[in-house]
Length: 255
Length: 376
Image 1 (cartoon, helix red, strand yellow):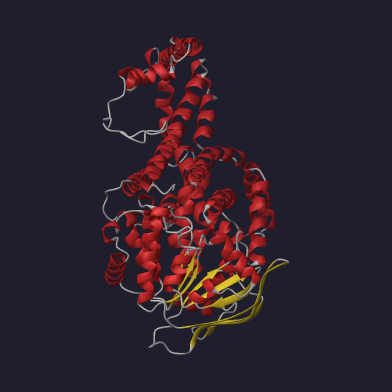
Image 2 (cartoon, chains in turn cyan, red; image 1 turned 135 degrees about the horizontal axis):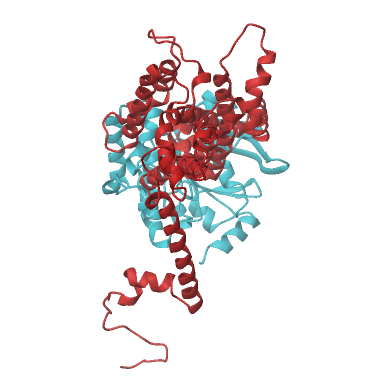
């Protein structure tokens, strides 16, 4: 599982970030970010809190705006052009730390909403797709329940299915297991591992280093808005080069 | 067994669930814990209970048992210690129709019947084609109703709005305000939260202006000041002017209620809608507004109820709504009996209460129905 990207993927980068800088007011939150992601790559981004890792992936689907530099996703450049933004968002799925399911809709409606209204699929087709993804995340029997009736692990799996129903090319995960009780983390990570096996391009911000070791092609360490170090997982964990990386790893790894 | 230190414990028999003690649950339990929990509370219960009984029996006596139901003003003169319901009875037509011409009153009846049927049809859960009826009641019906009431179309003779009065006037003003204020208020609230500076400024100015002036001034301005700005000869029906003022006024209040709902939503809902690729208006219609409006149903219904009662202010522009008609009737020298004014105002109060409380109950019903348990 921990190998180089799917051999069938093209070498054309699906995400290109060049010299990207972002400020929140006067606060320089992302500095000189250069990043290329190839189709089928699984990237884990880690770092101390406040390092800008969530902000970075939120720039990729324009939930945050960058002020300098260039972000190109799937050949489309992200500017203030609304059409480009909506095109990119169709191809990029996002899973949030706090699930953000729509509480007034059933699980099935949550999943079919975007395919029906954005991809203009007929309702029956959207429902069939949704049920197949709900089966993949192992909760088809909850389709007619409301999010408020599900556990945290179930809600997160619905959130993953909801994003997958749009059949995106890239999936972004913003600390997907950080808000879950420990006994539910495994069920969500299992779904993410199975997803990785199918060749999905994934960028995951997480503290789950076991997951990084198992699934990632590349681990990126960020601190204070900059990419400090990136490497293949084994090298990254066993042989960190930068002092800051070493400090961070010593704080989060027990052995 | 070896190895038994001082903190060791393992449960061998599992306890079964038992029903709670009888004196703590059910009616008896409720009475004990809420009414007689301490000696002081028990004393309060007895005092308040006694006061309540005295008050209610007095009111019932005046309203029902000693009241005059039939006969004319003679019967009331003979019995001034009870409500004079015959006063209401003899003037009832006027209270409902105002000065609407007698032969044309069937038009008012028609509009009232369609209104009530439509409201109950769209309000009741299981009714067929409910959404269509609801949509019809919201847009085409007000226009058609105005046409029927005013006349001039379908060969109906014109009945000037200065002749409209009583309960039908109350309904016209209140319903127009209610129907116009919600959509307009939503647009204003969205505009106020917009990123576009011009739209935002316009909405802020609009809202703050209409919230800053009393409704009575709005009505007065609409009726007497606005015509001064019109070119001579151009005439705009007075009631219509007042209605537009009422609509804009209540829209400003509704805008702030809706804005509260929009603010209360988790930012993640907006982000999830965005990340799925939903456009602004789609995400508003499908995700944000359903949740935001549900959250502020109490505030919305509050504004509606307030508006319903504010309609009494049309007195300032010489229109007599239900309260105005009753007020005028009380001044009749034939009916200058002690019990008549109280009876008149009691009648107005009861009528308003029925409608306002009805709205209140319906809103509770809607809230319960929409509650999908999303307080997680």
